[in-house]
Image 1 (cartoon, rainbow, N blue to C red):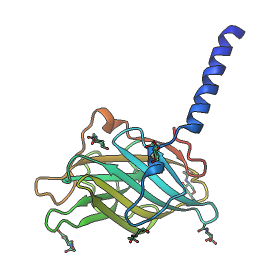
Image 2: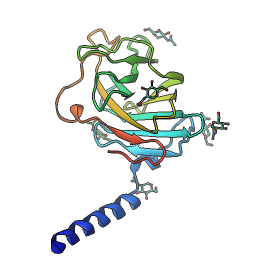
Image 3: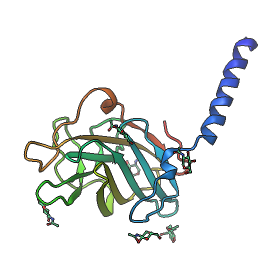
Length: 195
Ligand SMILES: *[C@@H]1O[C@H](CO)[C@@H](O)[C@H](O)[C@H]1NC(C)=O
Ligand SMILES: *[C@@H]1O[C@H](CO)[C@@H](O)[C@H](O)[C@H]1NC(C)=O
Ligand SMILES: *[C@@H]1O[C@H](CO)[C@@H](O)[C@H](O)[C@H]1NC(C)=O
Ligand SMILES: *[C@@H]1O[C@H](CO)[C@@H](O)[C@H](O)[C@H]1NC(C)=O
Ligand SMILES: *[C@@H]1O[C@H](CO)[C@@H](O)[C@H](O)[C@H]1NC(C)=O
Ligand SMILES: *[C@@H]1O[C@H](CO)[C@@H](O)[C@H](O)[C@H]1NC(C)=O
């Protein structure tokens, strides 16, 4: 019994040690608008990271979602999902580059169906200072301030990216395999711990 427990305990210790000292690549990221964030996490899939300041007395989440992609003609989204670690119920922030004039379109979309094309709509949370940038022909960032409630220290986050529709004027369905079905998890806004 003890022989089995010791290696497990050691492994846990080493893992804890490693995660404490591992430097996340997101810590090195600087935003061109010089915005700074106290915390960040490298998200495990889809070349993304989340950067944020969380005010524990006002429950205000000031965030940047950063994604590196391959082509400009795609959309990105980051969401809080109060109903679970899945797509339906996601309170999403969406951005893409408009093909008509190259400016970024950024808006909110509550996800209520698997067939959604992410139409604009009101979220359960008040969102302000919403903006987005597209840089270096590959990097998209969404900035926003989201007003949360006291019971949301740990949130479910969902993120995604996909192609634009044929006219290039809105999102169409993302891939439904590989990393695209693994892009969710929980996040403690105070400690930065993800799972
Ligand atoms: C962050 O930048 C430092 C200094 O430039 C560098 O030594 C380090 O390897 C970088 N870390 C990551 C995870 O990219
Ligand atoms: C960001 O900071 C750099 C260096 O201090 C400065 O040159 C640049 O103008 C700033 N950019 C913005 C958007 O404020
Ligand atoms: C957090 O919110 C409180 C209440 O609105 C405010 O007084 C305080 O200045 C905020 N703290 C920061 C660091 O913004
Ligand atoms: C992820 O980003 C790297 C560059 O940072 C790029 O080479 C790679 O193609 C990207 N992967 C995807 C799936 O976009
Ligand atoms: C760019 O085009 C979109 C519609 O395609 C429009 O809503 C937006 O106002 C335009 N932006 C600028 C800066 O012209
Ligand atoms: C948090 O509290 C609000 C009411 O203040 C409630 O509507 C919501 O369902 C709660 N959320 C969670 C995740 O428990």
